[in-house]
Image 1: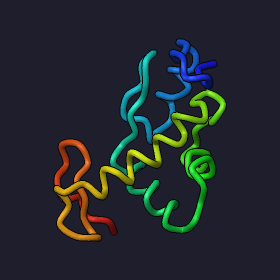
Image 2: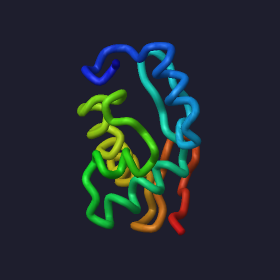
Image 3: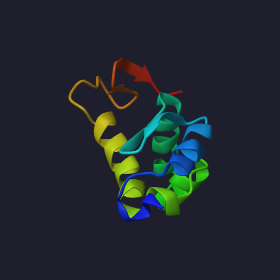
Image 4: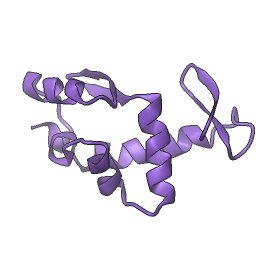
Length: 102
């Protein structure tokens, strides 16, 4: 298992890719979709922990490992707070500029 921060196995990659919130998955890492990022922010604002958020998105925290679990939430929050953001209702994530939260 990649839980210790190592590479994902082919079986783990298949599991990650089967999740509709996964944008990309490879041996070295994964990316989540814009929809997932919006959901992460909503769940974070509701008071859920990083682990609870990742599990709510349907991911196995044992496959991801503690650091990746924390990074998903941390990095999403960091992107939302980017200087490219206009206000609290919009944020910049990747190539999608000013995605508005609904």
